[in-house]
Structures are given as structure tokens and as C-alpha cells.
Length: 341
Ligand SMILES: NC(=O)c1ccc[n+]([C@@H]2O[C@H](COP(=O)([O-])OP(=O)(O)OC[C@H]3O[C@@H](n4cnc5c(N)ncnc54)[C@H](OP(=O)(O)O)[C@@H]3O)[C@@H](O)[C@H]2O)c1
Image (cartoon, rainbow, N blue to C red; front, side, top):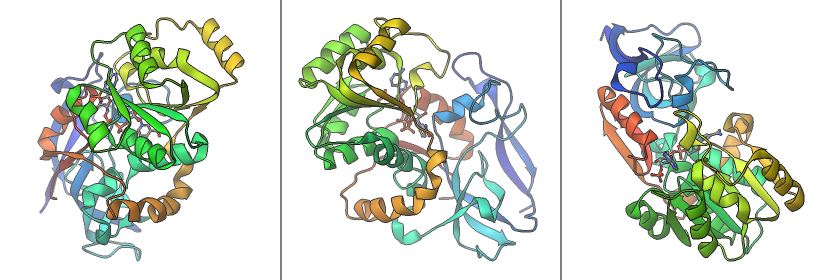
């Protein structure tokens, strides 16, 4: 093969992304240089953070330039290797982008052991999102048996892992998800004690629904969503409560404060009165702990003690549609794109 396909950022979105913001291109197949590997992508990950990379604003990572390949983690079969760490046919996990092939330095990739399961797992339950949940919970959760934890995007790869880890630590776990079907899945598939449908609820209605499911208040809030869910959670936080700020997807297409009852002055006072700990979480700060994650969580996934659900889109050309749907909650479980799976 002499060419490959990739999807580039054609223009920056104003609010929710549209088809016009993406462009599919055919380009020459790259040659791996010294220490690099060339892979044929099996699965590519779609994640909420990619929305942030489409904006030209200061963040923890640089934006994708106009005309640049959209960023993504992916897993692929090594076609050519100029590194002793990979041989032809190995599965490599790395940042190969929205593309059907990719070249990366071998030092920035790691090998996937196919005995762990489908290569797609390397992007979800045993990949970046599962690791994010585990890293945040083990580093900052400080869970005690009998405490109550709330998490939004409850059926996604981060939320579902958070909930299952908290249940295994003996906590009451209340999820927040979009729609009846996802709420049922949180309870029946992931073992949550309860799950609240956030659709059509403002902060006040969320507070009432959460109050009913969290009779002893909330000790840990794993923040994935912001918006009215956050507004509903804040008044219910207990003394010495912990908030782990992982994401705020409700605001990724443009910030709009829907927490209503919580102006900054009131929030500040509440943090003081309740001696709350609010901790930002970035999974890249924890990467050294990945071997520990694989050792602890890998066997649990293999044994069925940690459940996962995947939502598989077919073909690189369908990635933009699947991504736009993900941002609106159209995915059920970890969203991946099958390319040469
Ligand atoms: N800090 C880090 O290092 C790090 C790493 C990975 C992920 N994250 C963050 O973790 C969060 C979850 O990621 P994920 O990969 O597990 O995503 P995900 O659950 O697969 O997908 C995002 C989900 O967010 C929910 N959502 C969308 N709009 C919403 C809204 N307005 N209000 C409430 N919920 C909304 C939808 O679920 P419902 O249909 O259930 O509403 C949607 O399915 C995201 O905020 C992501 O940015 C952070």
C-alpha cells in the first residue's frame, strides 16, 4: 500500500462540532524513521477531551492545528518496526490519531498482550478511561466502607469503572446518566445502587432526586459532567467530602453556568464549612502507575468482576458522526471506531 487515510480538523467549531469541521484525506503512507514503528490501526478511540483540542485556547495540551490530523489514542498491528521493542505483528497502543495507519516513536507506545482480550479493551476498560477512573479513585477517593459516592456519565468507561470500584470498596453508589436505558444499565450491568436520569432536570430537580437516593448525603463526587448535576450535588456534600474533578462535558461546547444556586461566594463558604477537598485529576500525571493498574484490574476484567460495555462504530469515515453523537450522549459504553479490527 502506498497511501493511507486520515481525518483532519478542517475548521474550528463554534459550539457543537458539525461535519464541516472535519475532512477525510488520502495521503502518502509514511515511512517509520529510526526508533519508530508503522501500524495498521485496528481500533481508534473517541473521547470527550477531543472536543477541547478543536478549540484554540490555553489548556493542558496544545490544540490540533487547522489541517492537522485529529488526535486519538489507537491500537494497531505493527507493519514495520525500526525498534527492538516491537516486531511485525505485535499490537501497539499509541497516539496514532484519526487515521487508518500511523507512525510513532516506539518509546511513546506500549505493547498490548492479546491474552488480555480484544484489542479494543486497550482503549476503554483496560485503557486510558479505565485507568483514569482507577488512578483518580486510588489516589484521591480515600473511600471508606458505608460512604456514598455519586458519579455522572455513569455508563461510560470512566463512570462505570468509578462506580464498580466504589461498590467493591463497600460504598453506596449513585450514578447519573441520560435516559432510562442507561440508568437501567448502570444498575443491572455495573451494579450501581441507583441511577438518576439527568434529562430534563435543572439543578433544583437534580438535588431533589439525589437527596432521595443519598439519604446520608454525599461523601465523594467524581465529577465528569458539570452542569445541573454539579448544581444538584454541591448542597448535599458531607463534612470532609471529596470532589474529584475529572471532566465537565456539559460545558465542552461552551460554558454556561447551570449550577444556579451556587454563586462563587456561597460555594467558597460551603468548602470552608464542610472542609471539602476539591482535587483536579489528569490521568497523564499518573502514567507511572499503569503497570499497577494492569496488575490489579486486568485479572478482574478477565474474571468478569469488572464489567464493560463497548459501542463500536465501523470505518474511519464514520468517526466524525460517532464523535458528535458521543458529545450528546448518543454512545452506550466506550465509543471506539473499528478500522482493521
Ligand atoms: N481528566 C482526565 O484525565 C480525563 C480522562 C478521561 C476522561 N475524562 C473525562 O471524563 C468524563 C467521562 O469520559 P468518558 O470517556 O467516560 O465519556 P463517555 O461517558 O463515554 O461519554 C460522555 C458521556 O457524557 C454524558 N454527557 C454528555 N453531555 C452531557 C450533559 N450535558 N450532561 C450530563 N452528561 C452529559 C453522556 O452520557 P449520558 O447519556 O449518560 O448523559 C455521554 O455519553 C468526560 O468529562 C471526560 O472528558 C477526563
